[in-house]
Length: 105
Image (cartoon, rainbow, N blue to C red; front, side, top):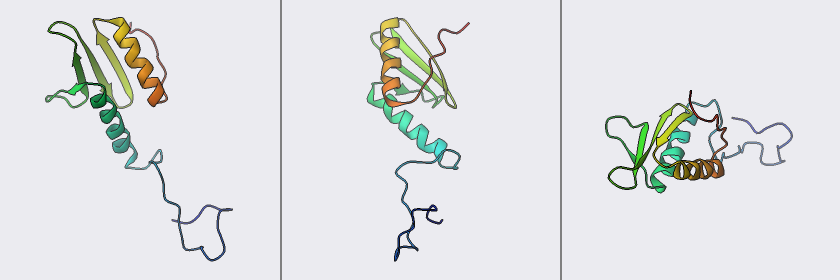
């Protein structure tokens, strides 16, 4: 790795920059994104299913819940309470850059 053009300092030509986050396109980027996503979900009280690690569920009582299905960087959220789903989407928006495509057809 080399320092970017225009950022080289005299006497420090052999030093490189340390990244604070993964770069898009690197082989580690998807894993780092998923770790951040999984951490967010667990912090918000969701549990990951044993059978499928890309499905999260949060139960509010015996009969009410939210289920989130994740496929790469797309997700489908289903549940009984639209207010709780909207709150989850708002929390997502504060942590991740996202686009809400609305209800599924």
